[in-house]
Every structure is written in structure tokens, then in C-alpha cells.
Image 1 (cartoon, rainbow, N blue to C red):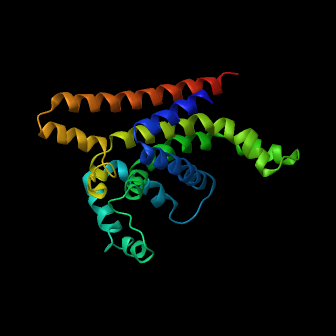
Image 2: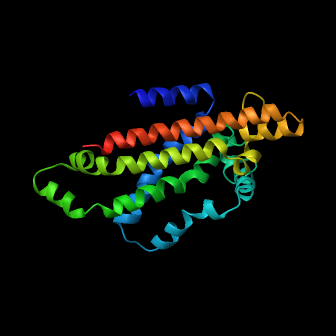
Image 3: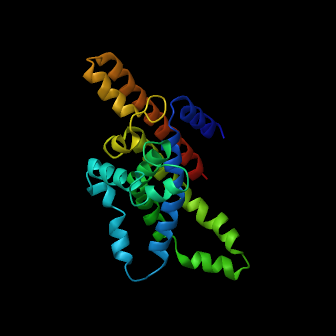
Amino acid sequence: VGVFVVFAFIVKRFRCFSCAASAIINGIIGTLLAWVLVRYTFPGRKIIDAMIDLPFALPTAVAGIALTALYTPTGLVGQFAADMGFKIAYTPLGITLALTFVTLPFVVRTVQPVLADIPREIEEAAACLGAKPLQVFRYILVPALLPAWLTGFALAFARGVGEYGSVIFIAGNMPMKTEILPLLIMVKLDQYDYTGATSIGVLMLVVSFVLLLLINLLQRRIETP
């Protein structure tokens, strides 16, 4: 509980709501994708599996331009949002969606191999002994997947904190609304404020390091019998 309290403080103090939201969304969607890819065989499975790694190979600036064009009020998706009375681009929602796209592979690729190593015979044996699907999930799958899930969550959050290329275009850099820390570093450097840029960089490093450290400590506690 103390780990999550500290994490919540960090999120609130350093305005990392979009990073946390995208990491949580990917924690859910990434786990579901990993489950489908491991447990089911269907046409196009290998194509979907390969497309998950697309954010790793795609230049972040290209991803940012594509997402901005997609979510602007005149874009393919943004126009439907505009018709419903809200916009996606140049808002925290747009930043969250961009970070979700970029950080999705971190969760899928950490959960997928662990899920593939869980023998299905264990689940079948539990079902034969009378365990319900929810009990199988809670007592068999969750203990095995939780360390990998936490690792994927931490990597997604840490990447989101320092993401620049895919977010800079869709954020719009509105003061106190859609500002992102990497862009503030560039602004400080353009102003020859090397002390300010260094301070922001150190802050980002500390936030990412503390989160990874807390996640590692939590993983050890979970894995310790």
C-alpha cells in the first residue's frame, strides 16, 4: 500500500497524469492482447503480433504527425469527436492517446512470454477440482503475471515521462494545460537556461528511477515465498 501511496504522490506532484493514465490503459489492453495472442489461433494473428512492435520501429516524430492528423477536428477520428462536442488534439486526452500508442509494446512484450510459460494443464486441473474461472484467474494467473505486469507498467510510465516526438505535435504546448517536460527542456536550452534544463532533466530522471525502484521492491516482495 505504501508503494502505491508514494506513486500517487509522485503522479500528483509532477503532473504525470497522462503518463499514469496511458500506463494503466496499456496495462489492461496489453494484457488482453497478450492473452489473445498466446491462447488463441486465428487468421492474421502473426500480422497483429508484428504490428504491436510498430511503435518501436516507427520514428516518434512520424507517429506524432500521424496521430495529430488523425485526432485534429478535421481528422478521421477528430471530426467525430468534434461532432460530439469535444476535441482530442491539443488536450490531455490527446497526449494520453499518443502515449498509449507509443508504450503499448512494453506491456504486451513483458506479459506475453510469462503467459505463454504458464501450463494450461494447471488451469484445467483447477477447473476439474471445482474452481470457477474467476478463482482460476485470481489464484493461478494473477500471482504469475503480476511481476511481469508491474514491470510493463513501470516501463510504460517511465517511457511516457520522457516521450517527446510522438507528443510534441499533438500536445500544442499550451501553458499549464498541455505542456510536457521534454519540451520545457528544449525551451530552456533555446533560452540558454542550462541550469533550468538540467533541473528538469534531473527531475525526470529521479521520477523514473524512484518508480522503477519501487516496482522492483514490490516485485521482490511478491516473489518472496
